[in-house]
Image (cartoon, rainbow, N blue to C red):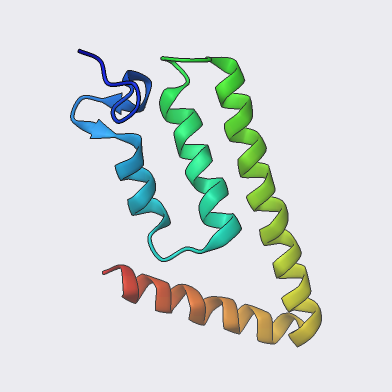
Length: 102
């Protein structure tokens, strides 16, 4: 019997449910970014089983929100510390993230 509340078919592929992927992707993220990227994954994951192109457009809408906010944050930080400091800080953050993910 299909369980549309706990295990809807459009959110399950094989033994994997989209919620498990979203939890892994957004682990360590907070707020707006985690919410939006979770929705991107959700809509891409289900598009062939539910709303097709509409779901892909929804995924794109959420991704654009994340991109816009990331660009705004980058511009704000660039304005606060100058390009040289920003590039150095960006490099250090990426280095730290890479070490954390290992």
